[in-house]
Amino acid sequence: MEIKITPRKATDRGGYACMPLKENIPLGRPDWRLTTCPRCGRECWARPLLKITMAQDAVALCTECALREGAEQE
Ligand SMILES: [Zn+2]
Image (cartoon, rainbow, N blue to C red; front, side, top):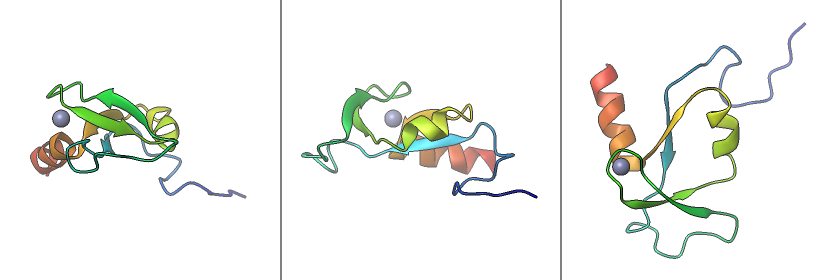
C-alpha cells in the first residue's frame, strides 16, 4: 500500500522548480528567501516548498527560465 501526500509523484525526478522573480513580486513573503537564478542571475524568491522539490533533483530557476526550459523539453 502506498500513501502519496506530495503534489509531485514519488517517482518524479529532475525537472524544474519555479522561483518567482523579485521584479514581479518586490516584497515577497516573510518565509521566502531572496536568491538568484542560476541561469539568468536575476533576483528571485526561494519558497519553503522548494526544499522538497530540490530533494527530487530538480533545478531551481526563476519563472521565466523555468518556462523556457519547460518549452524546450516538449
Ligand atoms: Zn532566470
